[in-house]
Amino acid sequence: MASKKQLKELFTFSNSERKGIIILSILLILVIIANSTVSYFFDDQAEDTSQFQKEITEFEANLTQRKEGTYLSRLDKFIIARYDTIKLYKFNPNNLAAQEWQKLGFTEKQQKTITNYLDKGGKFYDRDDFRKIYGIRRKQFEIIEPYLDLPEKSNYPQRFSRSKYYKKDNYNKYEKITYQPDSLFNFDPNTASISDWKHLGFSEKQAKSIGNYLSKGGKFYKKEDLKKIYTVKEEQYLAVADFIQIKKTGNPKEGKTYEKKTDTSNIVVYLNEFSLEEFINLGGFWKYNAKKIVSFRTQAGGFLYKEQLLDLWGMKKKYYDNIKQKIVINTSKIDKIRVNFADKKEFATHPYLSFSQARQIIEFRDKHGFIKDINLLRTRKVLSKTTFNKIKPYLTVK
Image (cartoon, rainbow, N blue to C red; front, side, top):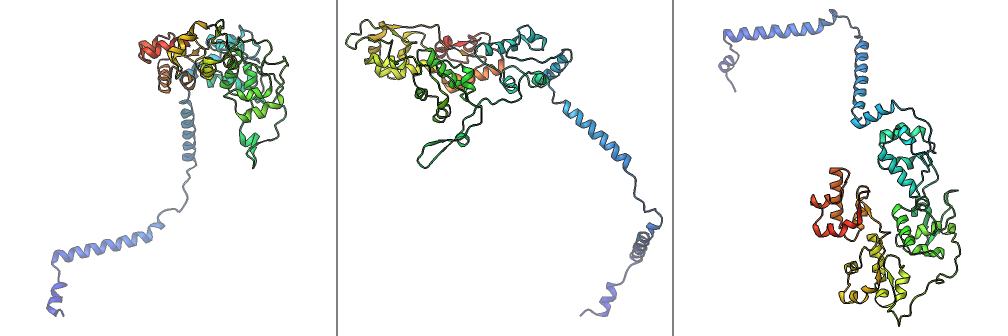
């Protein structure tokens, strides 16, 4: 226990310590008095901030306008300025005269793209069809859309999805579901145009495959023949089967004559014209290689020279030497790839191009713009010499 002497020493302060304690106590008292009396010296009224809030609102409005303006590219601003000087009017792009396109603000290149589409059997069924044309800028379409003499939305094209149109029952079969009215129409697959196929729900690639089949001598004799096209899905065939109306032309084998298998010395083989059935009926070499020949021809766009048969998998030169004298090649219907418009898949489908090479071509085109000369793909080392020499005849800049 602490003694009285120790306690006295603990609470004993020097003169300077006593002065400090006194000053600190006075300050604490003044703070307490000021805190309790300050409300008597000021009016307790809410401050009017309406003018300040108004200035904030005006500032935010101006800020939003400037922000929207930054989304306009230089080309969009040019389009807006150009159409300020053009008097627009209602027009139907399906039958517009050639000299009218320029009056409506379209460039010569845009006019050619649209004309080529129409010349190949294309048709604009609604405004969205026109928007998808290559070369039409978004801002340009926004300006001319009200003047398009086309419906905003048509009943075409159909899109086939199993969940919407078909479903599988317990027996793993397709069951038809009710269609929307007027969504399909009667057609003859032997005479239908690419545009007709597209508006029946088939993709452009499928329509071209069917067109290639017909142009190379193929024909649909019964509706089930449509299922034999390798790109046509089962549900697509079932969707249009009731609308197929094929004009009767007699027995499918009528008018076709083949040399006897025992005498093949006078046979002439038209490599780009014969159908799969015609190759098979020739027997021998042609029968066993018919599918590979037709598949290569479809993917490549046709044979340019008979030696290309050696590019087929498993083809031996001794077999080729035995049949090469009988081959005749017509190159007038070769399907070429448009290097400035084809997509990556169209390039990669060709037998002479890999997926990586297709990507290199696309990247080169995106970086340098319109390719005016096919030889740039070699001089700029986009493709190797061997690959370029093979693929060059199948490419076009048109």
